[in-house]
Image 1: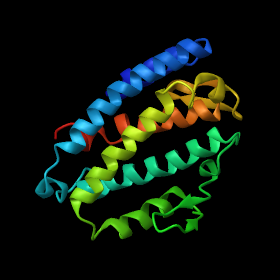
Image 2: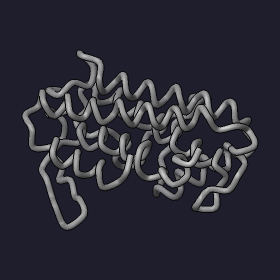
Image 3: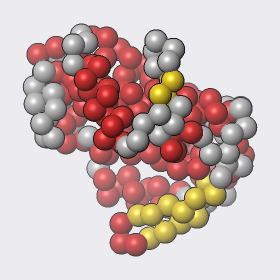
Length: 195
């Protein structure tokens, strides 16, 4: 999704009442999920090894999105259990597939750790997990009775900042949903859209 369209739709949705905001976010997320999973699913093993705009292989870009999605799934679990401000917001408590838990000092540290870990992984493994994680996140946010609007409203208050100095009051749960959509649908569009 083009950046300007995404941010415009989010800014229009944030002031809506809880039910209509959830519906608007769900519609945006459905579009992003379709575009993202379609793009990832169409990447061949050869294309996955090509260089992205930031110098990483396309495989590592998708792997990077997938690991952030996994961290978001973990944060969603915290929200569902009543936590108002999940550890992820401080880069704490990431659960690895092997069962260990790790804190990170910075976003760059998180990214570098996973890039090193994924370098030798097969593209098919990263590809299938990336599609699966994106689908899980979509279901968590859009399925009634899970991360519904009331639950998202009950999380810690935050101020969202947009281009042009626009600031809007919201809550951590909604912020996390925006981050998911932004990461899958906007931030890496230059690498995923030509696929």
